[in-house]
Image (cartoon, rainbow, N blue to C red; front, side, top):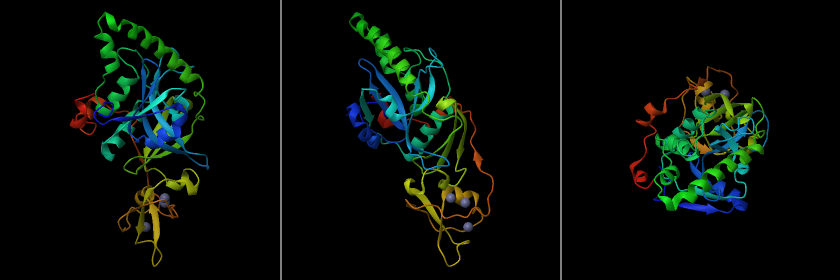
Length: 303
Ligand SMILES: [Zn+2]
Ligand SMILES: [Zn+2]
Ligand SMILES: [Zn+2]
């Protein structure tokens, strides 16, 4: 997996957070150097709020504490920029396929709200390795457990910093997301993932795949590169470029030209709407790890 050293990484000072976000690959790991301990997280990509033209949010998923749940930490969503504090940001290079990274993003979303934190057996690094590799390991904890006497100060320092980091990270970002807000995220395969939040990013009400036209999210001019398909059945002499959700929901029986990647806006009139796909809210990571969440071999040697 990509939380290792074979693929390399880039470090960014905290005042270069915008550059770090540009360098981060959606569906892969980042970490924050909290002096003596790295706080790990997964960058999910830019998420557009539904229904208005609010600015998109660089979405991060991590295992962290919260003022309302302290001392119990849980998997939560936050704005990348709120987690940096004054720490150096480490962005790991990632060579994983778009489909694998899309699966990692879903794995993260399925675990939002899951509680339980222990610096040695279930920390932020275990969480990241579990969603990326399908196995829960923390090399920081292994090093600490295996440590002879010389490592003792590291144990004390690591534990103390973790506690401080989780509690302080939470207090200033707990109210970032409005109650019952929906966010739209284009995953690396350019499918639209609708994330329906509750409890300010601490819980999800639902995760939907290609459920609604991409026009619903953000300002028309700010939407990122998406697949647009030219409908040959509806457009007549005019070309009608529609988004992927509309291709499935509104034009299910139409004939299409091959999609092109474009920053343009969907032109669908939604005349023939059908049912959207609601993804299950539960996922068994153990089962999943043997198939699509499988680690690619090139990464396993070092991490
Ligand atoms: Zn559309
Ligand atoms: Zn059509
Ligand atoms: Zn439509």
